[in-house]
Amino acid sequence: MKIECTIDGKALSLSVNSNKPLSLILMEDVGNRTIISHCRGKACGNCIVLINDEAELSCIIPAFRLRDATIRTFESYQKTRQYRDIERAYQATGNTPCPNCYASKTLIIESILQELTNNTRIKALGRNNLPLRDEEQHEEKLDKKAIIQELSLNTCQCMDMSEMMQIVEIALTYRRRKRVRRN
Amino acid sequence: MYEGIRSPVIHTPKTLSEFATIAYRYPSAIIWAGGSYLMSQKEYYPSEIKDGIIDLGSLEELKRITRNDRFVEIGAMVTASQLLYAGKLVLPPVLQEALRTLASQIVRRQITIGGSLCVPDMRLALSTTLAVLDAMAEVKYYQGGKVSTHWIPIAKLYDKDGKLLLGSQKALLTRIRIGLEYGDYHKFVCVEDPIRNTDDCVIVAFQASRSQNSLSKVQFCITFPSKAFHISKDLESKLSGMTLPIHPERVNTLSYELVSELTKMHSGISELQLERGRRIFESFLHDLNAQTLSS
Image (tube, rainbow over all chains, first blue to last red; front, side, top):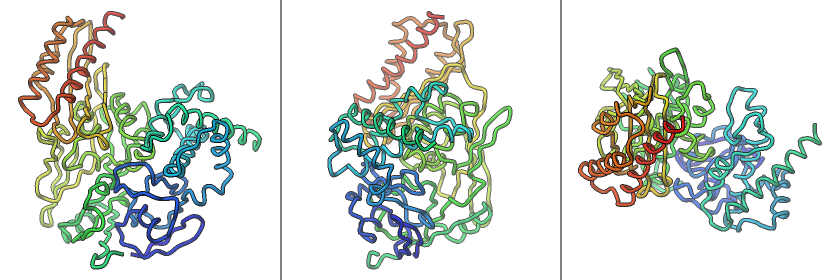
């Protein structure tokens, strides 16, 4: 099957089995080095990619669902300005994920940041967004339970959940400051 | 590509009548909703798929959520994430809680309602909750060129071990219907991840109505993902009509009745799961007592 999609900014036409998982396509056909595991859909959380700007587990996305999709792996994400917020949060806390899960955990944090900072836009569309407990105090309180649920998608035990939460909070502060400056 | 393995043909019907034609021509084709269960199977890839895959992703009529005064109807291809976003006004609280605890947001985007209900050998949070809510599923059976439609209660879609009972014919679950009359007490608890830790997981959903300290319309379902799907009509009727608060000794007796029922009807449930189930059930009754005494 021929699939036209954009991976890390490159428009590609791939000839792959129609049911091949995206994680295997990235590893075997594209030669991406940031996807290093294929758990066969067991949700180890080490194969996160951004598909049309939404974080997804690439091991449960088949090739036929990729037509015209824009896929961003950690390889291109680490060159973006958004990554700087998370990188600075790692530096500020002195805690960094291990090389095995660095890419995935960073993309999960990015997905959480997007959810939190896009909340106003989503609400305007009539959606009750998940990570915020109290709608009126949404700038102040994060729903820690929902964030922990997101973070535990990656099963690597290299970091404590409290350390991860701290990173999310600091990265969120950087992201919000950046938005305020831009506005 | 793996040598000798043909890439499966992907059929993408846009309407249900197109689906019927394809299902008739390719009876062994795999029906693909979200794909999260199918892709987690060991033999999924590489493997030969004879009649190809019918991708339901383009069937717009299965992606609708509609509501009237009496019920809400949810298309089978609505994702867990979309349903949760549909809002507090549309969904019963127990279903919202089930959707929230179902999986992380990243996985919820992938899980479809129909897909989750049609997993052949494992019962997850949605089946448990919808059974408690007395939800109905619209199932279309395709035999030869004929299509027949049936509304089946979710609780009747599975056997006591939680296996799907849709028969050997080609069937498609198209939508579910949830009544908007439900009790004022809801509880949903899921202990352990049902995918990562299937053998220790326990899922319990409970709903009841309270009026003047009396309990009525109790509905309760306990699921051990790959082992049992249990609705205790006996316990439900015992609880319905009880006056609150229930004496702690009675709570204890009822919880052990549940355990004995479970061990009698299902084999393979571990001691840990039984104890978890019992304690969760007890905690609901204690919570009901606490709420009654504090009001």
